[in-house]
Amino acid sequence: MRYLMMICNDENMISALDPAEAQEMLGRYMKFQEEAADRIEGGARLRPTSDATTVQVRNGETLTIDGPFAETKEQIGGFFLADCKDLDEAIELAAKIPGAAVGSIEVRPVWEL
Image (tube, rainbow, N blue to C red; front, side):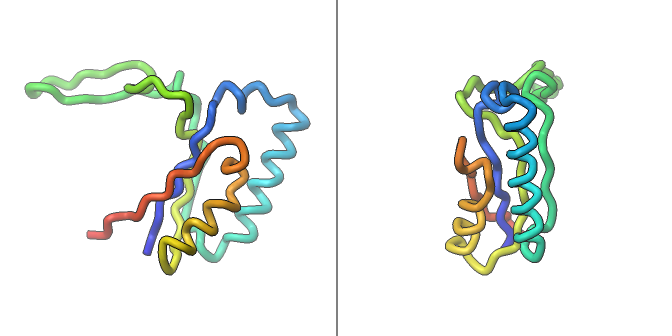
């Protein structure tokens, strides 16, 4: 079964890391991706919410809002798509994502069509 693992954290905290801390965090992500390569199908780091555009359609009209739709303490900063045998394995894998140590990882099964 495939699971989307959304990496949620305070993007202000992440952007405030000094260059050495940011490089160390990047190294932990690269190590995670190497170790989980057999289960990771894809993933990416996302640009900050200040670059986001939210799209809604109401009464046939397309509306756009600069930035995220909801104000939250944590933002989705990236994601992985992983193939795991079950939720327990997905949780075990999500716990190894470096962002879990400073934020949270939302694990959600993909609804296969």
